[in-house]
Length: 304
Image (cartoon, rainbow, N blue to C red):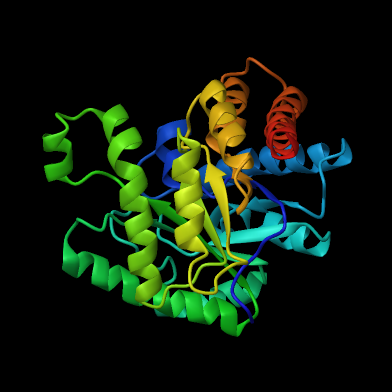
């Protein structure tokens, strides 16, 4: 299988686990069956919104979902049966270091659900602890090779949190970090991971405020014969205005093929549903409207 995926790709991700348990419902500890079912029902709302957006004209060929088997096993199976693009996470939720959700059995678990993409969310700062980065790289190389062995696409969600030293140097100013330091660190991380045998088909990239930074990321992602590798922008749970800004910037750069915007799409409607302020039908419509908006924004900016 050649490395890369260069068709448009618009993803509605709702593979969040700990943020549903703790953030949406305020639960800690081992979940009861009832609590597990409640989260699964919330994810079914998002899936229905995705299907509604396709019914209303979002491209089925280029759109997909990213959902976890823990709460979304039925959704993954249904989506695969109905010909939607499916993406499945491989990482344990909420960990500082990348660990496989299913340990050494992860390959068999992926095969159960037969997703188009297997995704890894990884916190990787090239100036962080070298031993940590080496351990993560080794696991991710294994995942990369496993995905391609089974003719699956590998999606890599790269988060580059500041090290303690970097934070101190910038006096804790997150905005300065995001605009001045993070873009170069992301490019360095991509290059380092590639050099260690990690070969994603799609890189999920945190929003960038400057077009030249997007250009640089694509250049590194596609270097040395990787011309078909695609990049997509993720929403970082930011407000709608910021997401629109990131999408508009990235869409103008060849190599950025789409986006994955989760919490900004579904969080407020699910909170309103949880609190009894809207009906399930209204929550579905609101999430679908947001996903359709991101798709339109990206497509319009790409054409401009």
